[in-house]
Amino acid sequence: MDKLFIFDYDDTLAENLIYYTRAKLKFVLFTAEALGPNAPDPISVLKLQEEIDVANVPKYGFAKERFPTSMTQAYKAICERTGVSPSEQAMTQAYAIGEEAFDHKGYRNNGLMPGVMKTLDFLRQQGDELMLYTKGDEEIQWSKINATGVKRWFGENIHVVADKDADGVRRIVGDHDPLRVWKIGNGLKSDVYPALEAGIGAIYVPWETWAFERQHSGEPDHPRYVKLPAIEDMVDRYSTLP
Image 1: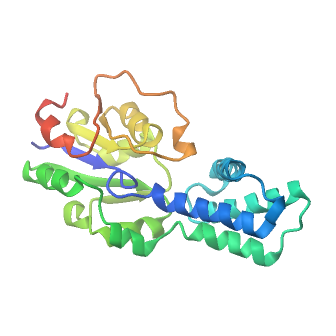
Image 2: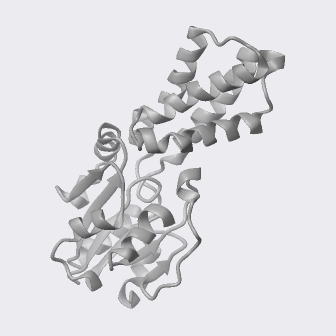
Image 3: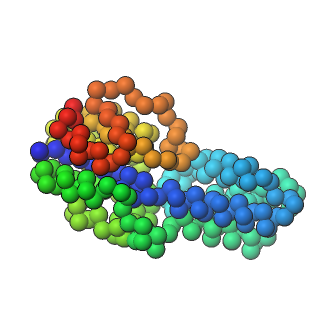
């Protein structure tokens, strides 16, 4: 009762990584078709694109331009390495492939992940407060939020931010008792560690994430850190949360 549960959105409430994965695979095929025998092997293409995308975070943050820009930069780098001059048309195509990661139709059709509705309904029935705290491009994040209808549970208690850190967590927690607050997410880097640093509990629900989010020191050893195999396990663990 009277707890505050702060939820991440991407790959916690609804799938997100899958859209980027599809775009990356399409980029590999595009590179193979555009460069023919000059194209590197698929693993090299994926690795290069990922390295460039992570390196672009300091400049672009999590704005929607970063991922498509990384595609064009990766294609240009591959061309330079193979001695091929990239055409403007090919560069435009590479950018367009990156934009396909923002699948507005997919957000609506795929909906929420298994167990999410059951968990949110349960927490509301306990009289607890729910908050959504998600980082990324504001336009894209709101597109996802509106497509999946999560305002049904969160109302206006939704925060879309450019990045997540402990100070940001403290701001949204406000006057709530930290011992009654929990942050739920699939990212150790952006969900768990900022929550624990801010003095609240963290519930880690593992789901595959991208290279930037894998830059961490592993799972923490902390009395208010809980790892659950699936989000619906919160229902059974509710009464025993430390």
